[in-house]
Image (cartoon, rainbow, N blue to C red; front, side):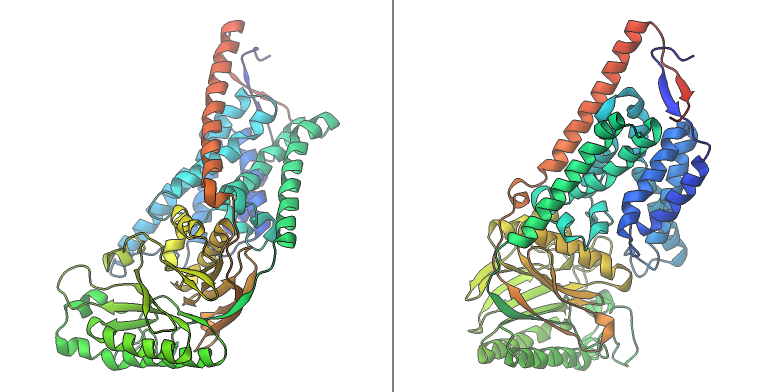
Length: 533
């Protein structure tokens, strides 16, 4: 019979079945092919495995399941790597990232396994969700800040997404991961009224309150005047082709930058054809009623010496048609050293005046960062007759604190041109929508090689289209340009910090309480298996 100082571990003969179910759900709870319910259920079964097996077995099994999930989720070049990296090295790097990411992902399971038996009541159920929030928040501070987080799996559940306006994505992460210890507590202790009241009721009340808040926000947020906005992507039949017409993955910016005048000039006719097409379509959209027009990120590759003439043509279009026109250019410099290019979004007002010339603040590490520098991390904004506009570029929206600048400036519409690739086209677009909910602005996000999307400040889709559905994609939407105040934009990541502080408190309580129990009983704690209730 175990001593008073013993730490209990429930037994379960079906643990291997739960491992298979949890591991099978995991690839659908992370990247690309996402089933929202899988994100709630996969941790339930994996936590069951880690709680019912000895740590030396259970945690490695969970780690292997996570390796499988990352390997499948990151298929088809989901992770951007340098284009010139040899195949074996790329495979080795991807494998290392899978192993490392799975090792991080197992930490909440390890903490739950270590602490749950040392705590009682509702506190046992808070370890896992708090650890999940802490892990996701810390990883959000790294080079690739917010990809694959639990909150993004719930895209489309509009009432639940509204929680991001209060807590950021961290509150959603907490809820999704809270279910696992709640159901495991019922699994271990049965479903008597006392157990249901102590374990299930707090979770049910919290989830219900979130859904009521979200539904009320969707219902009672006042409507605002709208303006016609257009987002243009480059003609697919012309884009990403070499001077000889051969289709390419991406122009070699370094080689072109280092090339001779004659070598560079070979690219000019095709690239000017693309910019001429975009300018003509911008004029067409203006005459159809659009008042604000933006191109997708890097829509027009240009030799740096051709930028002034293209800008002058754009000023004429904006002035003659009376529109706000944002160009998205990738000028390639003529140089022998880094940086080799630029990633710019240039807004021209209806008078033909340049309002901002914004350089992408956060190039993708190990990919774009090898080609050009980031610009100053300052979100530009301006007042227009339709409301206040601001502009960023693609990956900039992954940086949560950076997007607060637009909320502090009371921006009503964010122009966020993007240029993705097929493997990330849904994930990255859906992630960006959360920035609109968190900060209370509408967003127009035309996306070359991805999903173009227009949403309002509540995350409701106003228009969407796939770049690969047509050669010439013009996304048009009637969009509100009115800032909606949010708590999250004012307090930032307070919820995440509270979760980290509370987790540290639980760790201290667990070990201090255990030492007191051992001191009082005079017995060393041992792990003793108990039958499942």
